[in-house]
Image (tube, rainbow over all chains, first blue to last red; front, side, top):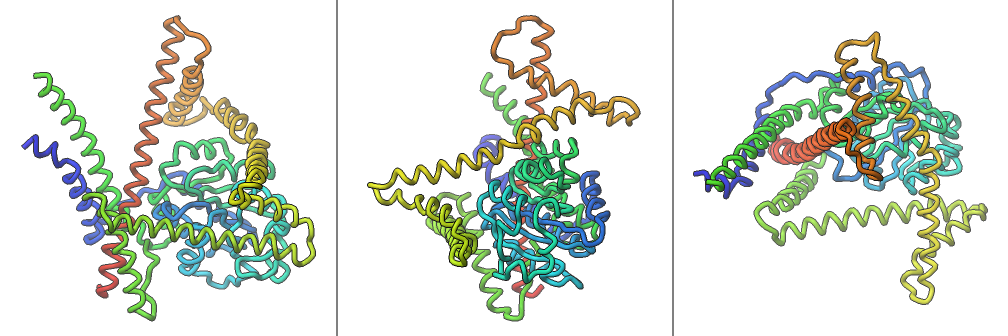
Length: 271
Length: 218
């Protein structure tokens, strides 16, 4: 039996993992979710924004990071759309720009917000960090029109957005590094920044929260679920947390079983 | 996740969802063994990503470069010409011009990043560590701050390779730093496992909830 287990351990692990993820999706368990301090801090930052503040949502992730970055972006934008603030959305990645346009913007409830007055979609900004610096220094000189080709003169909101000095809050959704936003917005201009990233980047980006360079951070699918609870959005990410919890239990059990098997297999070899 | 809602043209949505679901299953067929379906799905994904990038790239050049140039802003002639040098690599006689463009991109990018790197990623991080309070804080915060204050110098000390430290106390600092590094790498690994599990969960959600249930009207 042991030799069969060793021979087919990958298949066994995959089947157990698949069941642990699929079962809660069919029969939700309703496990409680505790909101973390960092997510609450992020929520409070947006809640306390003054009226008519200008918020720039800057997205930079790839399609492979959509499972985590997509819900974070949706949650942020959903909350911002509820607040009396003005929003500009820009992306420095082509895939993020397309995903934002086709999968995020259509599901946002804009309420009384009017395009051009309360929110604008600026589209893709090439150049990565260089483009970001140019945008921070001179928005009008960098992007002359919005994504749909309308000139900035025809968009009333853009009259008040000329550089990073006019930005009250930058929400930076990224899949790898928060460094460009910190370097180009927070350090030279003192812009308040909220981060959103995959949970795998916790170690590299949490120090910015500790140092005060970032005002808040939403980490991964779990962070998006916590944020959805705070903004009162009954979204599917909350249901997905049951799957994530069970799959983590399977992963921990696999690590324990793997170590026991390794030790047992080593003893058997030594005998 | 959760954003695919069946629109008014249900048949079109069902067909598109089915295509996406089948492509997902083709990708996962790699778990059995490398096969033609997996390769087809992989190449299709790569082609679509490149196609989108190319389309957005062309649109950017037109929107940000050519349009201002045509409207009379002649200064844009400089970046448009330098940018076009990238394609000189296809003409062997002038392929050296490609290096000019790339060197400008790399040089400007490095300069832009480095101008605030010292302050943003070194000075402010050091200040944040040395300003951690050890009094008038709760017990968990005190333990966390003490751990940070002791760990950071020891980890930095671990990377002193210019001379050998034989003193047992110095060596113990290095060993402590090494263990902290191991804990940190373990935490990074665990975080990446979480990320991958989230991606797997998203695929399962699409297949079970969005594709099958929505298509069957459940």
